[in-house]
Length: 208
Image (tube, rainbow, N blue to C red; front, top):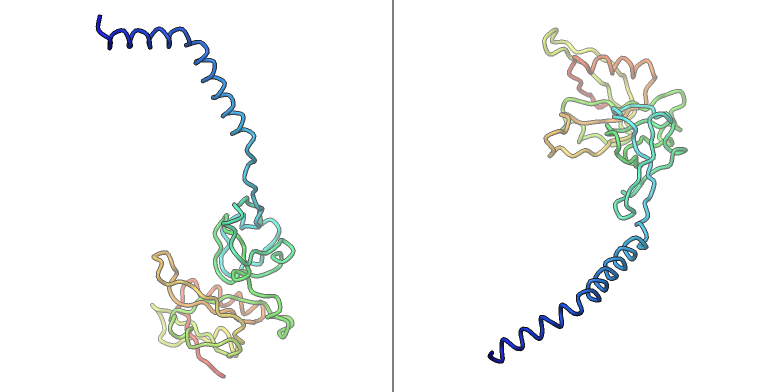
């Protein structure tokens, strides 16, 4: 029997003789690792106010439109609002279900302070370039033209003040065409514009 064989047998006998203590040690290490993992604290979550359903532009938010969603603190967007700040406000752009509500998605209540009795109405104008020329404080007429009908356009809003110009990305394939402008107008006028926007092309004339 050569030396290598004797060494191999000696090592084998040693391992076999100690296999139970080694197995017990491995089991203890596994239990300790499991206990340590169980003892590690769960990363804290932050509750963020989000839309409970899809909200179109111009929606007046009610409490039933809102939900609290858990977010990792590092992923919470800036400008989130509370329920007290959101209820009764108007959306300046569409909000998807589950999307956190932020200040830029809402028309500021102070914008209507100078227009008592008016509502804030987001209006989508067909020509985005025309909207790019506007500034808050401008007054415009909104015209509705039937693409398949008369060549004449009807005035659906007269001398309406521009109170907000929501920024929108036009690079996304899902982006809506045209440009969005928020006007302070009577509720009846807002309804007329909403009805016209379904089948008519909306354009603007800047007064001053």
